[in-house]
Length: 89
Length: 266
Figure 1 (tube, each protein chain N blue to C red):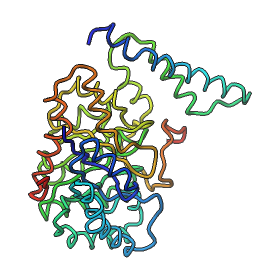
Figure 2 (figure 1 turned 30 degrees about the vertical axis):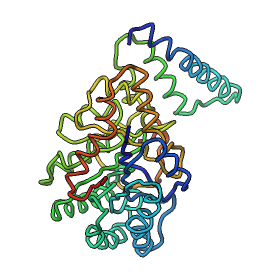
Figure 3 (figure 1 turned 90 degrees about the vertical axis):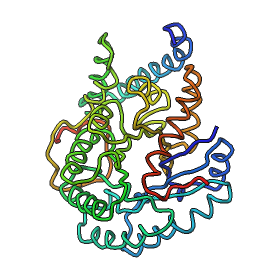
Figure 4 (figure 1 turned 90 degrees about the horizontal axis):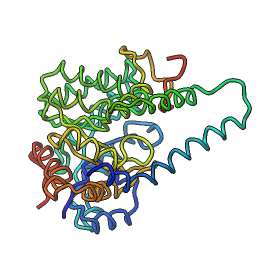
């Protein structure tokens, strides 16, 4: 596929996703809370990554959202994952 | 065109899903043992679940012309209690004798804890001892990168052949290392987490189709039992050949699963 074909096929879908992110951040802002949730901070770092011009954005964003430690943790206190690295880990 | 969904949890799906999958071309599935959304209160709960996978579910699938196979294990979310997990592991060898059981899975890590790792290593040792295929679950979201590395390191401490192990739920940040180390890789097509059909198609375009498959991992959470045919449509819309689409959604899973000696679509 060339660029025009890719944009023709996917532009509206991703236009909608950008608007979803904007509306989500607006929704968070309307809470008027002093402390920003770590997941929102992580998302803001991902948005900065989107501004880069080199290929590999998806991989770099996944790395931004990953626990970069290498040792097993002592015990699994929970079963779930939050999608971004919590401040304590 | 026929397809295989090599990872789907049909115990959590309705019979209507079997019907829709058959209508979309599904001829075979494999169902790994997994967490039910709650912790079982006894090893007997696992015994009954394994009977469901080896006896009940194949009959339900057969009504729609779908060949049902499965994998047996204790999943990492219920592996924190080592004593409990070992009791479940003791049940596994008998079930591996069943005709539709292809190997041990989906074993792996969830929160990357020490106890999870111990139980993973014990199940890898069992797979090695009994010459079983292995299907690996990699952790969710922020835990995936670290967990995938720990899992591959654990496998490399055994004599398991890498081409008899599939590392599932890969994404852009893990697939390269998985393939470079000689393992098979699975991409799970989920609406919110893991890969969308579009990103899976991107990954296929970047990494090729060798030792790679796609699956829906449909279960009781947000998931889509028709994700595999939707990814096939995505690939076709980009102009990919029927041969490539057949390779990723039929020939590759057939090749990996046939190493068990039990996989059949006849």
